[in-house]
Amino acid sequence: MSKKVFKLIFFLGLMCLLLIQPAYAVIRESKIPPNTLLYKSIQTWRDQSKNPWQLIFFKEIKGDNQPTINLRLVGFPDLFEFEQPQPLIINIRDDLTIKVPDVFTSDQEAFSPNMGQYNFNSIIDKLESNNFWILELPLKDNDSIMIKVPYFILEEWEKIIVETEE
Image 1 (tube, helix red, strand yellow):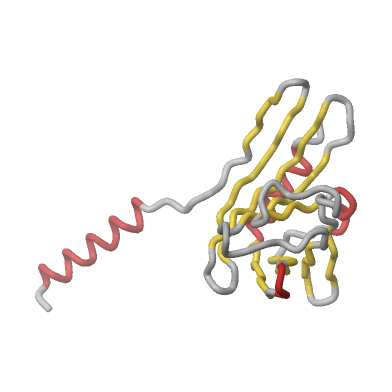
Image 2 (cartoon, rainbow, N blue to C red):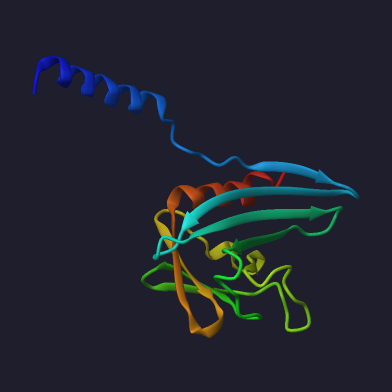
């Protein structure tokens, strides 16, 4: 390989590294009438089969009421369907597995069958963001779908819980 070709490849590779920025999600704050604040993080992440999922972690504060903290998981329509009401299982570490309650009861249907939503209020004190979590999604037909959520997404969720408590 000639020196010119090597230099060109090196230069293009260096430019790619300098120009490509890592993708970071932003915590968004919204004011929703009447008297509601919403803090949310929206990420797209893939399961073990490389299917994309939208992970929406949010904290909703209505007036002077206690905040509600939820995780909404959304998969492709007609490809995935959640079994409801079933808890989301989170493997936080080898010796800690938590079941997170489903927001939707048997009387209440989800907006869409490819969406699950889980209430984190009762498990906030058990959360750890120093590694990764494995989410086991409760899908119909006993489908076993797992999403491995890395620490930097968990740290963002933790910011929503902690930083918005003022």
